[in-house]
Amino acid sequence: MKDSIRTNVVVNIIRTVALTLLSFLTFPYVCRVLGDAQLGLYTWANAIAYYFLILAKIGIPNLAIRECVSVRDDKEKLSNKVQAFFILQGITTILSFILLCSLILTVPVFQSASTITLLLSVNFVAGAFSFEWLFIALEKQFYMSVRSIVILAISAILIVAMVKNQDHVYIYALITAGSTIFTSIANMLYATKYISFKKTMPYNYKQYIKPLSILFTLSIILALYNQTDSFILGLIDPTKVEVGSYAVGIKGIEIVIGVLASLSTVFIPRSTYYYGKEDKKYFNNLNRYSMNICFFIVLPAVVTMAAMSNNICSLISGESGYQSAPMILIILSSMMLTYSLSDIIYGQILIPMKKEKYYLIAMLIGTIVNVALSIVLGLAFANNGLSPAIGVAIGTVFTDVLVLAFLLIKTWKWSSKALFNANTLKLLLATILILAVTLALNNSQFSITALWSGSIPVNSELSKGLALIVIVLIDAIIYIGSLLLMKENLVSSFVKRKEIQIEEK
Image (cartoon, rainbow, N blue to C red; front, top):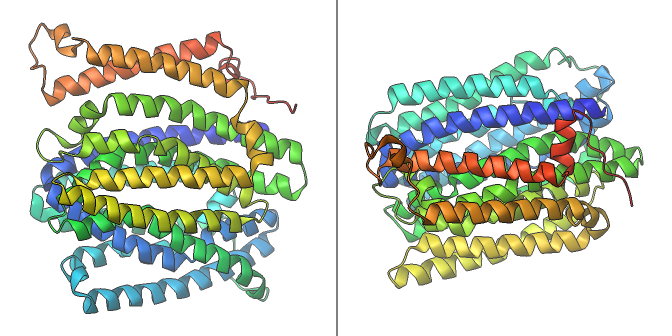
């Protein structure tokens, strides 16, 4: 069991690194080709489509994972649950799509982005056939990794080959939506290996009413919480330029959060299984292991991104447009830690314990605060000639800290030892060390162009990109080396090639 967790973690890391590299090949290209206004239009339309994606899901994926884990060793029962959830999600997807079409046709503010919004709605229509929750429950990490890499690689090639100017924003939307279609086709074909679509048992929807009502409400709140920033900015700034800047500023942060969310899929089925078996010791150890990985990845990412924000945004978007992006990146960098920890607490502690209501309360309060602060600060900054995106970012960070504090209070018995221990202190010390190194190199006359005797202009995108790579490599060597010297649990376990051990105290 432990070996397969280690394997799944490694597979997920490989997948995430590959997907990140592919994303960084395409997103900077798209930023330059589309420009801040058209990228802002795409981001705003995607935020609208995302709301209806959540309506289509109604919280099914999280419940389906938990239910499928409990019967994954019985093909007939597993097939019955998969069929039931598939039928239910098919119905909600159709209703959600009808509602979206009605909104676009009747509300004037949405009609300017109607075409691209409808193209992006393919994501949630095709998503009804994805069965991603089944493969998470079955822990088919290798399959999901290979599939994701292949499909994203094909999408990247199509984007570079077909998206050539600002008018091609619709082609870009169609390609991104197409990747969801191919994912769903691959998943449906592969699912037949583990389940049957032939009905052999009656469907018991009654048992799902209460948990789905909670998860559905939570999903709506999460949609508002996660997409409010872009949506509000689109209303404040009709040009959508500020939405484009915000999209660039948050891009790197979303990638790191995506890494942790991806790794979390490894732990959710196991946490659910062991809590259900009342194996609390291993349940605690899984939480510690998961949060150990979170701190290991996020802490250096926070300080490096904040310190190198100008270089990162220049590398992503180029030198023209997206003026507010570096400051937005600095402000939002802490979200990599706060959001990821909140997500771990929800997925690996509250869901197995069937206490989703605490996350519901946290996100409800957080959404109200976030919407209020985003509007007030966004308008205040705009009225004073400043970037409204910066005001929105400040409100988002404040809200994220508030949500995490609430969740920690409610799960203190389970989360405190996983968060506050000697191993976390080692990671903090190593992070402070690389922060000092990063600031020293970044604020000095350090320039990668010196290696080429001044053949590359100091302020060019290439120079900044190469400087960023060199500093990150130096930081990585110092970070890993210092953790080895301090015998940090995660690094030591991989070097010694044995499973990490975190004993109860």
